[in-house]
Structures are given as C-alpha cells and as structure tokens.
Image 1 (cartoon, rainbow, N blue to C red):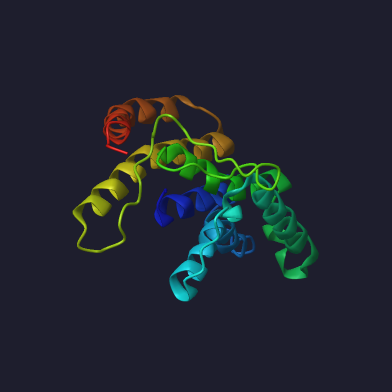
Image 2 (image 1 turned 45 degrees about the horizontal axis):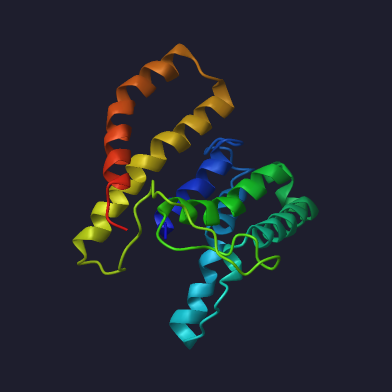
Length: 195
C-alpha cells in the first residue's frame, strides 16, 4: 500500500490547486483535504487496536470514496465559518478517490474497488509506486520506499498545482525539464522493485 505521506501529499495538493497556503480564510480546508485523502486507512485503527479484520476493506472502495466526498462537501457548504474554504465537489472526490487509486498503483494487493457491487478485488499488473513496507523506524527499505514514492508523486502533484493556478508557462516547462530526469529515475526504480 502507498504511504501515509503519499496520501497526505495528494490531499494537500488538492487544497493547493484551489487555494494558496497563505489564504487564512480558506486554511481550514487544508487539514480536511488531508483527512479525506487518508481516511480510507482508518480501518487500520480497528485492526491495530482491536484485532478486527474486515475481509473486504470496504474503505478502499470507490463507492466509499464517493460517500466521503459527498458528506464532506455538504458539511463544508453548510458550516458558516467554512464559506471561504469551500471547494467544488470534484476536488473532494479527487481527494477521497486518490487513496484507493494510489494503493492500486503500488501493484501489490488486490483492492475491492467496486465493493459492494462485487467482492472481487482489482489489482494492477505493474506497480508504479513502492509499497510503504513494514512500519519500523529502523527499516531501511521503508525510508528508501518513502523517498522513491515522494520522488514519483511530488513532481506530478507540484505540476498539477502550478498548472491549475497559473497554466503551463515557459518557466513551468523549464522547471519540468530540469526535474524530469530525477522523476524518471525514481519511477524506474519504483517500477523495478520486487512486489
């Protein structure tokens, strides 16, 4: 599965594509975007704390992402203090659906993307993101995989933010040309990892 850092980065990028970081009135939406992007892993709390094992892991289904997006969109529209932090429904849907899609991009385990309509899992034949691996601070592979994941995701997310705000200027393309070799190296390393 993708790392907490990767999921949180997508949530932050979803916010930053719409608002600037120094926009204090919209800032309440930033932690909400991050929370929406990581909430599919909240089932791990039940696994870790209570030993519960849900076979389907329905939190990694696209219908679950749609429900989360609708609930958060309605909540953010109804609270008076969030008027400046409002974002379109599609932004909330992107934040929520990014979680199972990033996990799918790891290519390690089948995911119940279409649960409850089918129990069969969907898996990717190729992994373009490294797995988070065993969560242990002394695990060297965890740190390597985190660096590779950020090396693959960050240029893409930064590009989405810049293009959504300013368009693809010459400056953007020059920066992309400089960063592209590093991104390609990270992507090749990530794809080449054993699954």
